[in-house]
Structure formats: C-alpha cells, structure tokens
Length: 242
Image 1 (cartoon, helix red, strand yellow):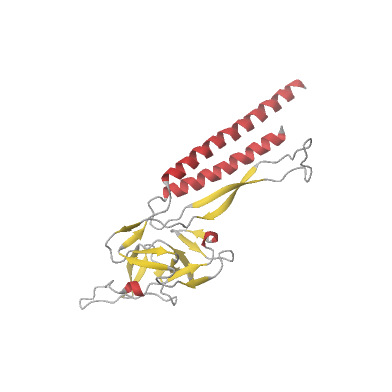
Image 2: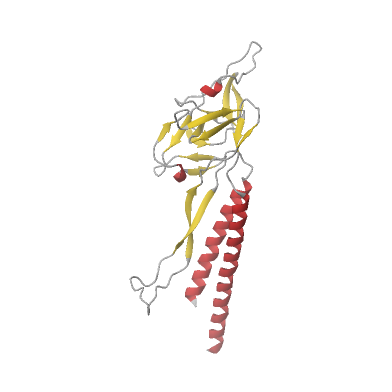
C-alpha cells in the first residue's frame, strides 16, 4: 500500500500544479498580449524495468506535471484609439529594456516616460521600448514641448523568436530568451507581422477551455486524495491485526 500512497501523493502535487497554472491563466484573461501557458503530465519512474509482459506488468510511481510551453496563438485585436497602444498581427514581440536586460512582450500598452526632460516610449513599468537596432525610442515634441506619437510606429522594433514556446516567462507579462528558444532576429514588416497603432491584442486565454481543465483537475485531485485515504486506511487495518 506504500506504492499506492506515494502514487496518490504524487498525483495530488501534480494536479495542484495544474490548478495553479489554470488560475494564473484565468487571472490574466484581461491582460493585453498575455499568452496562456500549458502543462501536461508524465509518468514517474517504474520500479520494474523491461518486464512489461502479461503476467508481470510495469508498476509506476505516479505522475508529475511537465511544462508544455506557451500558447502563442493570436489574440483578438481591439481598437483603443490611444496613440501609444500597439498591436502585433502575426509573429514577433516588442523588446523592452529594464535593469540592463532585454525582455520580450506582446503587450503593446505603452506610455511616455520623461528622463532628464527627454520623452521616451516606455511600457507601464517604465522599461524602455526598443527600436530595431536595440536603441531607445525618443518621442518628438511640438512647439509647446508636448510629446507627439505621430510617426513613431515606424521606429518600434518587432523581433521574431525562433522557438517562442520555450521562452522563460518573467514578471510584468514579459519573456526572456534562452538557449531553447533559439535565435532572435528583427522581424520583416508585412512578411512576419503587421503593426497597428491605436490597438491592443487581447489575451488568448479561452475561459471555456480553462474552466473545463479546472473541472478535470479538481476531479483528478479528488481521486488522488481518495487513493491516499484508502491506502492509509488499509495500513491502519494491517497495523491493528498485529
């Protein structure tokens, strides 16, 4: 019964991780540019190897949750009419710089940041939005010294990642490139992407799919909890027989 106890406990931890992932997706259903993260399940180590015959089946040790990457399907664009809002249609990411580190995001809800009296295009966290050359985007000003957003769409860099599903999620709806995500190159307008000003890309989280997955995870959690409880009750009965 120890095997059943361990398998049930492993299943509880796996389903809890799945529930945490679903909760994170649902919490960001209204976050512009958010991409849903996916998880799956994988068998843990079998105690008897290479003996999977009819009279000696393999006995597993439960399951664990595995990261299946990020779902990068296109979110629905929505018009905002705000000059500092941008939406990417197609492949690619905006690049933002914070703490000497470049991150990538699909959230084009930008702002105007003033540094020593100079206006720059930034994200909501104050990180600089970068152009195709990796430089900061300085906004022009009118005769009254007010920053202008006309024409800055041509300055914004859009970068295409070779394997975006393997990028590392970081805070503020941003992602970091790594060895698994591959190379990063400057995107080609009208080939890789189309950039729209005055619009934002909605999250691609499907409420219906997430609710279905939540129900399945809850039922699986309950089943594994029952396995642990039953294994514990059998051990108690065995102990009482001694």
